Length: 319
Ligand code: CTP
Image 1: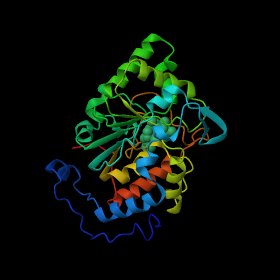
Image 2: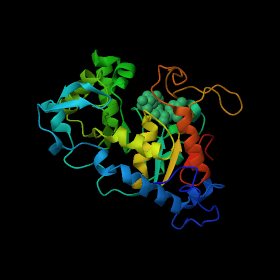
Image 3: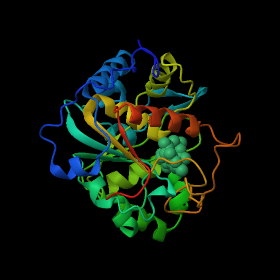
Image 4: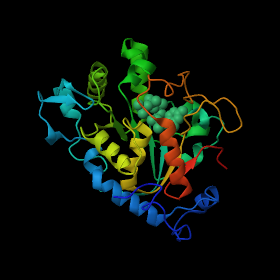
């Protein structure tokens, strides 16, 4: 397999990419940037050497039976029992089976989105992926409203919904899930021990309240194979962030990937403060050992891929 920045991704910059069929909206908004379709295909091919993206995006019902024991992906000594509720919510088939989209948005949660006016552009993509169940309606102008695929780390339940301990938080959470309609809710339930209570409460609410959301739970190998792909390209990322996981998965399903809300830095290019999240007061953690991620390294990599036309990274205002 190739190496980003060296042979595989050093594609002749004069290579023509097909822009046919692209609505004028995109031609306008991506002025100065062109998708490099042959590079996109090359990356997809390389990613698929590691990832079986359809399968890795979620375990399916037939993978387990109730009562089975799962070893946590990043904490192999600890285990989780597959409850009846969890089993009932495993999808029968991968939620992305046979899916293919012309353009996708992967939306990170950086404060760089505030005052960006990117909402309309984000919503106009064929498939929109969001991370960690972020608030949308209050920020619609900057982030949009649409979501086809929403991730949710179990920690979100504690951080944003008070651990679902009282009725108000629970109702707020139920309303948020109702807003997802029948799109995908992706819960990394098997990564580390700690959030299992929250995952179970969420699962029970989905069943009891008959929420139409389509649950998905990443495969036990996803993080390892994604890490493997980047490592072969000499990018050593022990714990890929949700945003990078989503980009890597999207390479399988999307012909053109647009990233928004990726800016893991406390200041913008003009020295102005940038919030870590556009919607809360969470502080930057990734410079300390408290963060498992290497977001600045990820960002540098994504920027390099942007310059080569493999993806489009938007970190400023949308037109
Ligand atoms: N992100 C970014 N810059 C920020 C905040 C987030 O680039 N200032 C990207 C990262 O790729 C991150 C994604 O947006 O994974 C979603 O953000 P967030 O919900 O904050 O992710 P974390 O909880 O910090 O990390 P993770 O879910 O990856 O463990």
